[in-house]
Image (cartoon, rainbow, N blue to C red):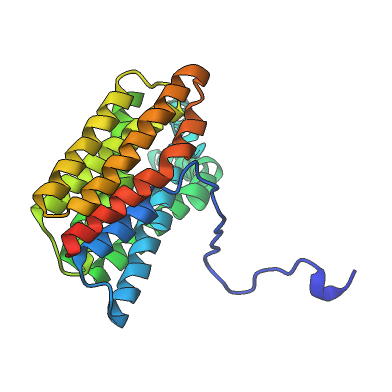
Length: 294
């Protein structure tokens, strides 16, 4: 085999970064929410704002997504619990060995050091380090964007930790906040703009996103009705913001979703429904952002 194609050892690089597409169910998510928040700021036409937008997309979609995924899906959480139980057995061995007190103390210290080296360090040297690096990079970019993004990123990271420790319904709600409301507000505040109406829009679309996740997971229940009510709230806010054309477009999209909901009641395919209606929701979020801009 040619040497140019043979595996080469890493000589001096400390950190390896692995990026790959996730093939999401819909394009409605952190990246689109951050983009709509940037549009809502009204400051998206300068060269500097383009850089801020790129950083916000990287922060909200890649880094906060990595933080959440590493915490929720990595095996090291189970391994730590298992090893902690083993540690209690390991460290509870009787220390009534022969020798002086100093020698016994030294043997206990050596046993603990061997436990860390053999069991804990392989865990720390893998997903825990990746999670810490993702969090550090996220906070670093947030510091560049401003104080409000720092607070929002810290809140998103905290909610990501809490999500894995709560029951599924509450956890999915926290996920919706982290993937829609917080990215919207990070991008908007990073560009130096904030309005309380933006917070209302962000929360309404968070509810729509939460409903879409429930429907895709075959748990429609009341979520279809809540999604429709949230979008009606968006229509009313657009009318209040003197955007009758935008309100009409969102209303037409909502009527189209109602038609797709009739089909959903027949085939019960939640994933297909989410993919069919995503375009209407993407347009509705963009129109809401434009209404705040204008």
